Image 1 (cartoon, one colour):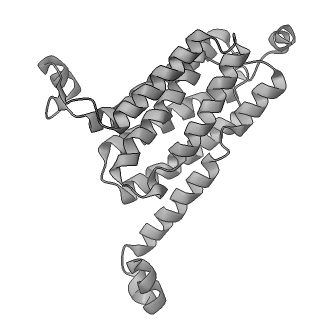
Image 2 (image 1 turned 90 degrees about the vertical axis):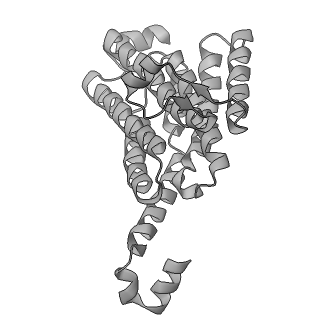
Image 3 (image 1 turned 60 degrees about the vertical axis):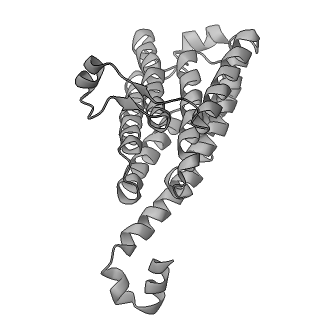
Length: 247
């Protein structure tokens, strides 16, 4: 509001302040959110057209779903501007659809799926309500991680967990791509948009938030998505023989 008043009343004074950076950051933030509303759609459509989830790791889909659920649980109570984290809400909806679709095409929505989904939702609620008591890490773990203190709060757990889940979720997919020598039904446009979104979010996080946990999460996401984009370019999609066999 102050920046808008300065822009309307005194353009020169406006340009001499931090307002231009703030407004650019806000614009980029909302652009990221708008883009995130459809970022998973190419992947969902590609699976639907192929009638197959060949080459797509179940662990990767599950952990990405849980990571976005926990991300929303972390940000919602903090009161940060929606422009700094809102894409997570849209990604949660799309990752939920992708998780259900993958389960349906790889064995059906059986008891194991219901158990996984229920556990994930319960974990998200517990972290959103900050119901996990503070706990103390072993001194050896603190030293190895270079932490200044060993006490971890529920808020810190909620902020850090998506990074770990993102790492654990992406590594099986990266390893599977290397093992099978192709990237299956992974949609290039989805991961390219993920890279673009993470790069833009890096700028807005540096500009608007003083939150090292949020910053580390963005950097990790950018790096892992870059690896998968490189694999898609270098290894290619499902070979014709594998595709015909799946059909």
